[in-house]
Length: 94
Image (cartoon, rainbow, N blue to C red):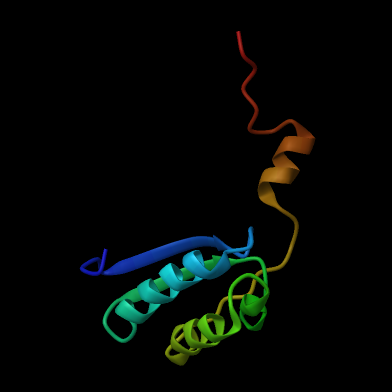
């Protein structure tokens, strides 16, 4: 993974990470810092990382992630939820 040009981490913050997962995430971010591109999707503000992992790891990871970042904020309703509630994108079985 450390040799990839781009590392994508999807849905950070969906579940509490705890010490081991927080440490693993930090290690990926630290190994890629200033060497590789990292794209992270999340449903919380980066300064809320300490709600899903230990504060020291969260602070260090966010520091490295935001140092050279291009932050893209999106708003709106979930495309998947909209499709599901309107019947689009659904293929009947049988």
